[in-house]
Image (tube, rainbow, N blue to C red; front, side, top):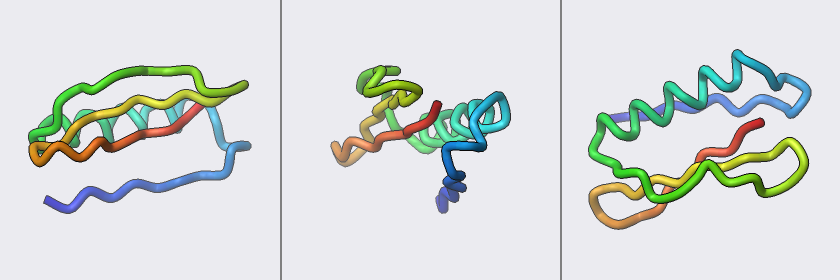
Length: 64
């Protein structure tokens, strides 16, 4: 399964980016990933969530 993510500059925050991040997370979970940890606040206006794929690789999703 090919997953495509679009990375936008920080000035494009808000609900559109949050919805895109949610869709990427849902697609990764549907492809067999499991929730690893997060969401974590890593700085002002920066959050990440981490998932683990079926092979043990941790994948991070960053957004506002």
